[in-house]
Amino acid sequence: MSKPVSRGKTKLPPESGKLLDVIIVGGGPSGLSAALILGRCLRKVFVCDAGEPRNAASHALHGYLTRDGMSPARFLQIGREQLAPYETVAFRKIKVKHVERGKKRFTVTLASGERFASRFLLLATGLVDKLPEIENFRQFYGVSAHICPYCDGWEHRAQPMAVVGCDQDAVDLALELRLWSKEIALCTNGGAGCDRAALDLLERNGVKIIETPIARLEGTGAQLERIVFQDGSTDARRALFFSPGQHQRSPLAEMLGCEFCPDDGSVQCGEDASTCVPGVYVVGNASRGVQLIIAAAAEGMQAGVAINGALLEADAGRGALKSGAGDEKHSALVSA
Image 1 (tube, rainbow, N blue to C red):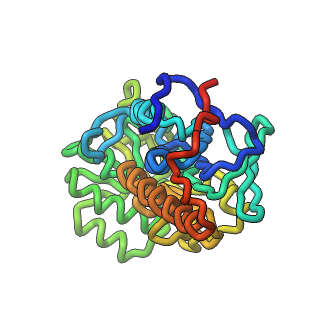
Image 2: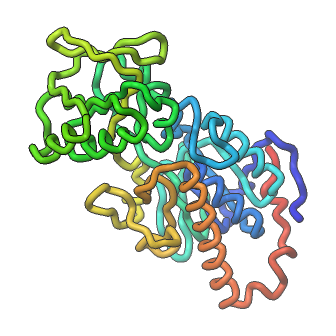
């Protein structure tokens, strides 16, 4: 069993010249989950997190059994606390600025200028959402303006809701929200970018279509109450959903030569999260269509198992398992 260390202290890799087993870039649900698995396998792991979670504006996460309703910040705090007893895992809140691929190793450069090397690299850097450019939008974002109906639809069930968007994704989202409410409006914020058949389908299913451009959102505190249009008309709504454009938060996958899916720009990965670049794995929103926290955590676990398996295969091939993994001391990952 690993020797416990004091909770709340930051463990640092002792020297930049020492080769680690895995560097994980991104300390969200997928990155922390992978770190837990790898740490328990006595792998020397270094987690670097820039502290920019995609769901920072959200007041609660949902759809995660045993964690439903918990704040995302609290979820991450618990995750980091549960890694503290593992002296094999180090965590720092710092951004990785650059990565280089060498012979059987990857070298990352931190924002501080420090450089660390590892045998494998796991990217859990996530995505950035493009938010609607509507006046007052950020006032409601995360409380009554959302992206995912699976995450937040229940909280607004039977309430009048709007979808902002003019493409097929917005049409699909408006139809989906009919499961939670019979009062759904699609606000195209101008002309619709989908065909007439799609709009007819919405109308047949009771979705109101408003093509007038939006002037602003209004409400009390973070609770949306109405949408105000440029012609002065208003529409009372208690929640707003949208399908955002997205892009990779980090350029590291591109630096390494990973392949991307042409349809959505996600990193192309195998079922075990491996990429076309040997030794590089990608988990979480950066590589998957299902963008739920519970799915990200599961992907991190799967990637951790896959990376440990690859490390085991490499070590066994060169006879490095003879002394036993438990014989190596990991006191190098000390509290600072």
